[in-house]
Image 1 (cartoon, rainbow, N blue to C red):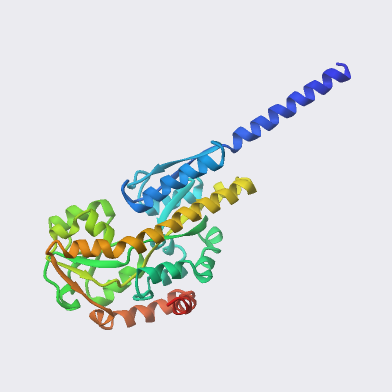
Image 2: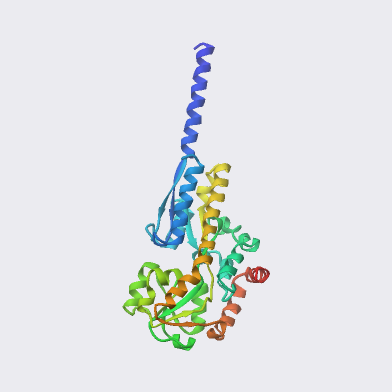
Length: 327
């Protein structure tokens, strides 16, 4: 083979290698959520996918799987750890089951209101809690979003916290909220979101812990005697990428994914700050018995929670300091 032919073969091989590498980097990412299609988190995930496709020149795309299509959050987190799932928008609640420091976000009345909750999530202290996730959980956390503050919907009349004692009260299945309602003397009952409406309607549960958006949009108030506006806990969300998937991405792709995903999960904060009180007002205007309460309503349950979680989460004091600085 003469030198010219060898040179042409070499160039051709290089072009094939470059083309192959480019093809290998292109990816249709799979992103899972538990929220239904109309939910703010789902819409943010879809917007992230659209912008990633645009900014990558079509090299990357995102297929969004809402409404637990890929399993509940515990199952999706396992898939992220193995690399079977690329990405997720997930409650910090589920992640805190494996990284207990994140449970500090659920300190009762850490946030004064919905806007304050958003400011807390944007602090360097909050963002720093994501640093340990690759080593502890096998995921990369790129930023926070949130749902609204937590409220209580009850099938029976409620005037005091004592009216909830012994009552089966639906919760998201994670320790901080379980500990809170145990301290109140209720019977916290973990239940996935899709089962909640029927469970409340048929009396399988007596009450639910829920945010204003879903109380309004999914009409949980239709099966309630009383809606308690308590705003007692914030409810953060985190954008996650599988650490295994992350390790196989180029630096350029990592930066693009981090920037765009962080942007779209953060947009959820602004959405809830703008809409949360409007949803609560709409619920109140339905004529359902509606009461507004503060920390005193919960008696010593708050002190019990604080005592327990000051030992469980090393981040609690730092997060309280960040909350104080942003009041």
